Image (cartoon, rainbow, N blue to C red; front, side, top):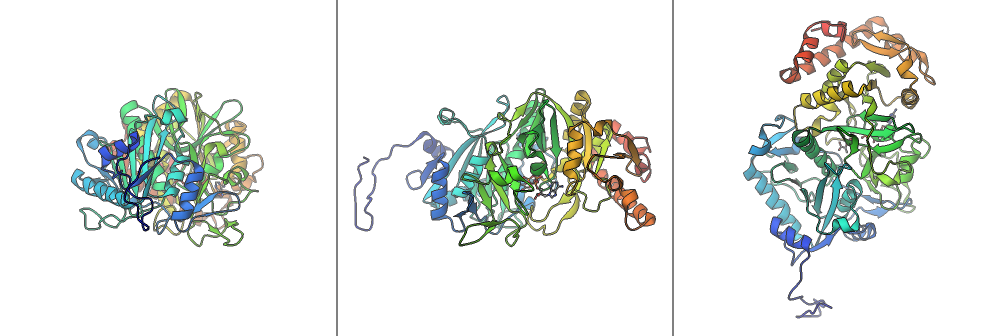
Length: 552
Ligand SMILES: Nc1ncnc2c1ncn2[C@@H]1O[C@H](COP(=O)(O)OP(=O)(O)O)[C@@H](O)[C@H]1O
Ligand SMILES: C=C(OP(=O)(O)O)C(=O)O
């Protein structure tokens, strides 16, 4: 029993005169001035503890019928890309791709935000510490510590990081620390602020500070940006905004896709083991997942359509911003009253055929670029060459789906380089070159797959059975893509939009030319970093791009 003094009827617990402090408390006190004598620091709590705390202290949390905890993220129900900043400092400055994605923050301003976040955490009665690993390959993994005010955020990151064994938690030394004070706003009068939200990353201090947004996805995507910086710069390892799975023969498929375009859905496949749904690295020894969990979109989810994901939403999983019946606690996955971007985070082992440890020493044999072209101009599936891969990877033509980013309420056609522009740390061409080298070296097939179609799964099955690699192809003009003439289970007439276009040939020609011009216009931004090969291909009409490049 700890002796206490000064008990009163209003304060029956009294005051504990001298407290012993744990290693984590000492470290937080020293590093961040956390007031360990006032704030209860809950260290690596269990799922049950986090449920109880969330239910008692956080309004909007509930347990739903499947046993999952559901939480409400407040006003921000998607990421805030305009409020993301990188601290401009000597060690990383020359490597960073400065611009609208990575806006610079002065170290002095960083200190103000950091102090504000810590001041807020120090006003809380309890804060949570979650320690976990990022990166399943031990050679590259980072120790991540999350310090946050909400039990929901702690549970989210407990699911999304790789959970260390009990003995690995002892004397855990973080490489990166996330301070999440998202319930408290940033000071809008601080230099450079355009709103009360701030997500700031400091690569020298190895810290992330979050203010003014409780959207949990900011934390996991913050770690992705850390990987987009650390891996190529320090280890020559390529980071991918992709999912990955592996077949029974050990063949690995990687799916690149912008947020909400099908990485999680398409990589959950009963015939294939899941390596991961969102963040991977490609090293000299194969592919490894960065995360210990998955973060699936839930809108329209049903057990029939996506059984693995539906059944993963159980005790321990965290639902975000879903609508549930207040009596029965049944979730209505079709209700988008709070957001289109309803989500669930669950540990990867909740997917029955997850491959644990989440890595493969076999290099990918199929690379799939998920284009999500709502206009239907790009074919449902086409095979592309290594040179076309660089072009399409850099272009990243896809859609921003509703709700994933703050302020995007309708699906929007967009170019998002590397199919993950908001998360890149370096110039996209650096990643594209690394990708092209690996594809050529390992002789991977590359496919451009349009998602959101009824037949997407059937097409994927044909890729995995090797049917498509052996198919007959015809040339899809303008983009010079190789389109298969038939795919099992897919009506042949839909394979070539030129043939299935409902509004006539002239309209088709107009639309396809319009899109091709947009591609070329967009590509100009990247020309300064393009290799001579890519530039040459870009300036001369060539068999690689054919008529497409002629448009310049
Ligand atoms: N053909 C399709 N391919 C992939 N996703 C589809 C398709 N049709 C509809 N969807 C829906 O699109 C969303 C894709 O989200 P998700 O797989 O979580 O994306 P990501 O992992 O890339 O963020 C899901 O809600 C899924 O049900
Ligand atoms: C969570 C996000 O993305 P993804 O759908 O790729 O997980 C996001 O962009 O905030």
